[in-house]
Image 1 (tube, rainbow, N blue to C red):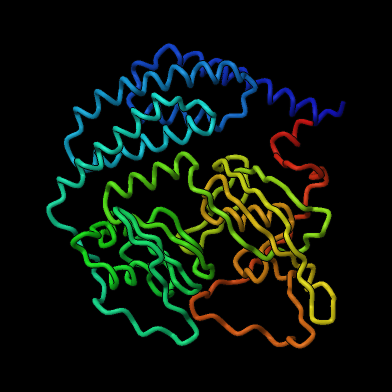
Image 2: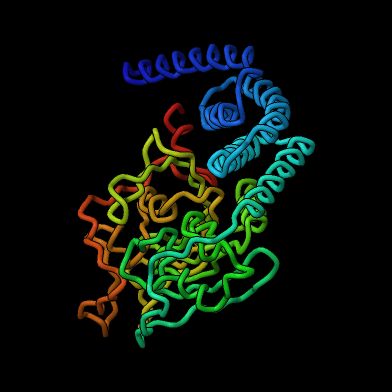
Length: 388
């Protein structure tokens, strides 16, 4: 056994003993925690790499029971919108952590959801007016190379829109790019009387998830607080299936199915940040399946590119782009994450690709990370690979 391996195993042992002591101490004081504290503890347990599975299960079981008691107390004591928003966030975080560890019982699930629906009604009744963002009343003219979004479904409390490339799912009063604003488009289609949240930047214009500007796909947005809670609850319980079609580079026929589990964290400021894999990041899981190889007209492979179907179990910012780069097969034509060395070549297309006005980001200058040598099975988990 090498000295570095012995040191690594000693560190794992120390870490395990610390978690064991921390879990034991928390178990004795659960009745002193409020919902926020219980949510933070549940998150810590869910993302920890402790091997004490039985201890984690026992702690989460009692934690869930303590949450039911704390929720009844806090529902009676919240007095303003800020407290209500904080409690909603904590309840959703708690539900996610319990669901992540398969510790969300049906009775606890029912109590948490009933509490969230009650808080949604509190918010709905307390809002007398809806702030409008300081922005032009008319949308700018649509560039001829861009398509207009389409409202696919407009039902009680929520709306589904098809976003074409070039539109930003903006969640603040000021957009993060020079792209066209999807919130402004929805406001131009749906009046404020029955679509309150679509006009409120304090709640991200009702959007419950995002797509990158250059991507296209379906976007869920809440029209009311009740719709927002319904969508966020399904998101927290991973009940919304999210599937993406992506072109990746360097994926051969041997890599047909893989699950990537690697923590990710955003680094940088605002729109200039990138999401990278690192040990102290947030847990993230991506499932990837190669469905086709892309060929040129003459039959040759198009730069080793493959058509890939991707499902995400978690929804971290730029998760797909970070995870595909992590395994050494970044998304194609992606200047923000793909190194300069990655190109797509066509026999009849040797000139530079035309610039897209809505994407103005510098090339990634870092090195391309080679795929891990031990990634040969159906599942790749860097935490497991490190101790094998």
